[in-house]
Length: 388
Image: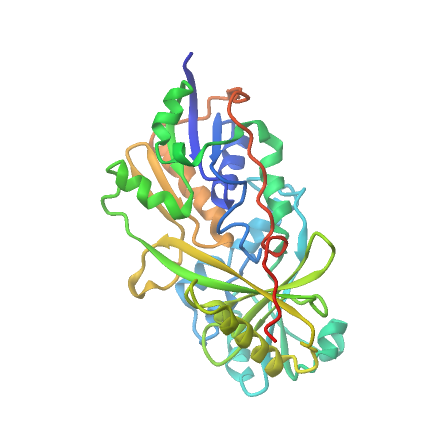
């Protein structure tokens, strides 16, 4: 028996989930299919930062990425209040804001940047007397600049997007995911449009379907670091002399309650096949330089290899917008960063409008398709070790 639906989405990462929730809320009949686990891959590996763009202007100039990102925190906060295009009121916020930690001697350029009110004037230098206790005890000597950027708890974000319509979030076996049209036909599902948001496999599916003309993607690997137990909660970018932080630190609670520091930025910018000890050494040096009061004796380390896939740019820099490729009624999307996800949702909605696909108001029963579980946070799956 044929089941016509408005759109089928493949990939339950943040891009697929946000678009799914947005379209369902607008009255579209949507099926979201995932071959591994909800949020697996790049999404569960995210630090959860909703960037405002300030860290991308550390070179003392506004770049296009900073301009594009600057409006995103307000859209995310509206969703967290239940007032946006999706309802994230059930998601938890790990931190309402972050710090830029700038050692003495580097402050001049950043002060001028903040004075220019480049990103709305929402950043300011915080007096040392107002620093959190852990930062005061860390031995940091420099300036702490307030960043009006929330950090989201990604596992709760996944649930907030998926749970309201969980019956339409279903599983697809890995061997079937490479033949999506056959899978839909076998189950009598006839979508008006399809959207692929599984970043790593999108390009291959487009190529196999002969829909990759004009599509270019790039891989930018990361080897994220993890350290436990974290001595105190910290959400900060450790700023050096380049336009990339020496390290970006976010804090997460493991299933057993242990605090973990999750480490990105320059310490993680290396091949996935790199020696993990290089990450540990770079992170330890950053902490010695910026937080000399932190005792690293007895801590354990781990790494998480990530293969970021996104639209291609000259020089393989991070794109300053999401990427959406269309071939007929089939769309392929990459949000580039967590913070850009609402913008990708805008792009998908605009393409559906161009295709003349309006919300049908139906809610098809997909209970015959297999269920799918949620991804496990990286700190609960890590192989921990001591470098000593």
